[in-house]
Image 1 (cartoon, rainbow, N blue to C red):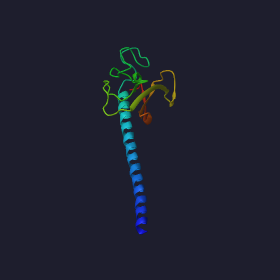
Image 2: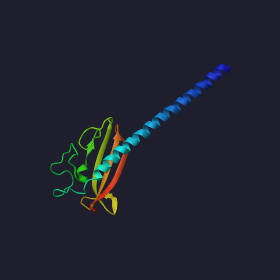
Image 3: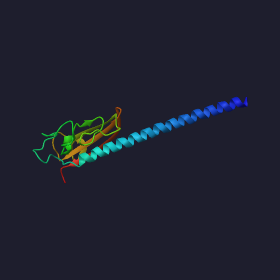
Image 4: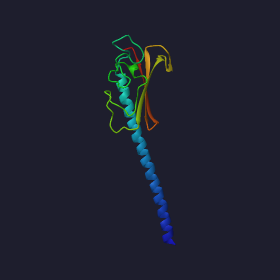
Length: 153
């Protein structure tokens, strides 16, 4: 009888220990996924924010200007060139695919906003643009970064 009770108790403890280990592994995977998402979002956001507010070479217009491609961001020279950019998997600025990031997607939205209320999108140039970089993995949103870029130096 004691052996049967001991076996049952050990079995229950083993099941509990395995569940704990399983939850720990899932938490570590999620943590690693969030860290990767933050790094991907921050890297693309830094790239966007390093660009000029508006195109320095031509008559400014929102979006891509002539000579800029929708399949490579190598020629992007102002923040609104990134509007609508999407890549799956993530790429370096020259268009080369980043290794080991299958299933990851980065998207960018750029909007003119009211400088006194950046949550309000407007349809004209107010001197302020809101940039939103979203990162997802296997169709699930992982990280979003938002920043403002103004025409003031």
